[in-house]
Length: 244
Image (cartoon, rainbow, N blue to C red; front, side, top):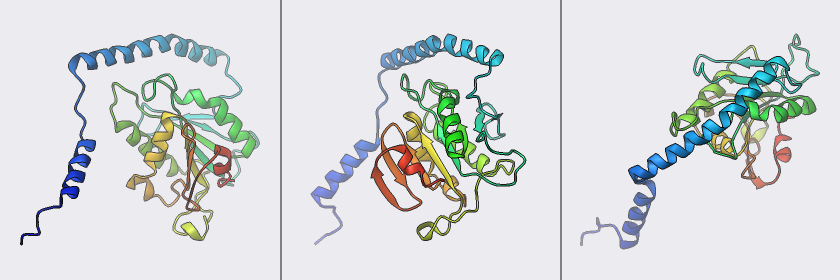
């Protein structure tokens, strides 16, 4: 008897999985309609963003970052860096570090900039004495998936390797993660939460000795705390306690 033929149930599962992994592109007219909506949204958002930029140039807000820095890996995607107000910039001491990834409730992966989270980043840095680094990523339609994931990956890896930043790269994490060190976490808002969760699964990030030990997707509400091997549901503050 030939036992090489798959069982009916296995074959059905294979077919279902294959269908789930394939996605037919939408009709041409649908693509044109969606593209016009995207550019309309960008056009409507541009004037307010332009006015805000000029206003902040002449009247810098109290929530502005201490440094806006570009890395060679993504020179067109600057990151915004917030030191705690009480931190002495000449001090050799390191800081627990939180990377943030912005989202956009209006049009995920299309609109939004790291500037949108300045108020949160400044408040969090000052209140919890944490170094906050707001990452950036390219937007649709000029950039298609998975480009934003790899943008965040490249900037995260370069920032972790930036010796000019006082990132805590050496503190032990405990018996559950004895091969990794440092007090580093990453938080994403909305669409940025998807990117934050995805980037920590990439080998380029996992190879880093001080890769994020705490991952938070703020919009979804699910918490993945790899530092202690727990997964649960709750607020961002509960998870981020692992940093301080």
